[in-house]
Image (spheres, rainbow, N blue to C red):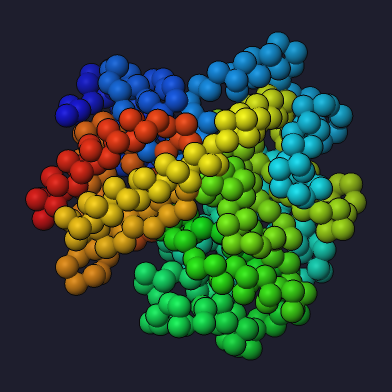
Length: 431
C-alpha cells in the first residue's frame, strides 16, 4: 500500500497551494515526476499504473519514443512559425493524415478541445447564419463561454457565467432513462424529444445552427448510447437543415476502437472536434469538416499557436504509431477483457450497478442498495485505489472511469484490476 505523500511531495503541494489558482481540483496528493508507457513515477520514486491516461490524452503511452524523437527533431529546426500567417510543412502533413484517416477534407488547427468546439460553433453559425445551439444534459464540451453554453454536466461549471442561446435535450442514458422508459421499446424518445418538445416550445429549428453531441458521453458518466440514437440525431439534422457536430475530443483517436467514435454508430457528422490524444501529449486541437462547409474567408477565425510545429510533429508521430500498431483493435480486445473482469466483480459487489463502455472508454456506476447514485463509495474507491498504486478519476454523478493508455499491457491491466478489487473491498467495508 502506498503511504501518504512524503516530505518532498508535501513541499511541492504546499508551494502549489501558494501560487496555483484555487479553481484547480486534485482528487489525491499525487506529485508526478516521470512516466513511461502506462506507468507513472512520483517524486518519491513510487510507481503507479495509469488508468486515466492524463484524461484520455496519452493514448500512445507516456514518453512514447517515436513522439519524443519527432518533437526533438523538430525542436532542432524551430518550435513555432506562426502557422496561421506563414506556411510550413508539419501542419500540412498532419492535416493530410487527418484527411486520410477521417475522410474530412478540411482542417482548422487550434490548441485544445475547448478551442475546437469554439471553432465548430463559429463555423456552424457562419455557415447557417443562425445563432442557436442544441446540446445534451450531461454533456461536457469545455469551460470557455461558447463551449460552456453547450456544457451541461455540473451547475458549478456555469454558475455566474453568461451563455449563448442554447437548449438541451436528453442524452440516451439508458441505465437511468430521464423519461423513465425501457430500451429497446422506447423508440429513442430521448432523441424524439428534440422535435416533439424543443423545436415546438423552446427554439425553432430555423434559428438553430447545430446540434452538438458526444458519440460517447465523457464527463457525464462514460455513457454509451444505443445504435439508433445518433442515427436519429443525424436524421433530425438532415430534416431541418441543421449541422451535426460530433465532439470527439475524449472519444476519438482509437479510444473506442475506431479512429472516430462516431464510426461505431455508422454516422458521419458535418463537423468534428478533436484534441486530447491527437497531440501525443502536446496541446493540439483540430476542427474537421468538408470544403463545402468550411469555406469561410480568410480572417473569419484564427489563433496564434494553431498548427504549432512541435505539436504538429508530436501529433503526426502519434497518429502514425496508432495506425502502425493497430491500437484500435487492441483497444477493443483489451476493453472486452476489462469489462468481463469488472462484471465478475459486479456479481460479488452489488455497489457496482452498471458496467458500460466501448473499447478502452469504460465506466462503472456505483449505486446504493436502492439503486440511487453513490458518489461517496465512488470517491472512497478512487482514494483507496491511489493507495494501492492505481490512478483513477471520477465522472458523472457516481461513475469511475477506466481510460488507460492504449499501450497498457495485459499483465499491467490485470495487476491494476486486482488492486482495484482490493480498493473496492476496503471502500465498501467503510460504509
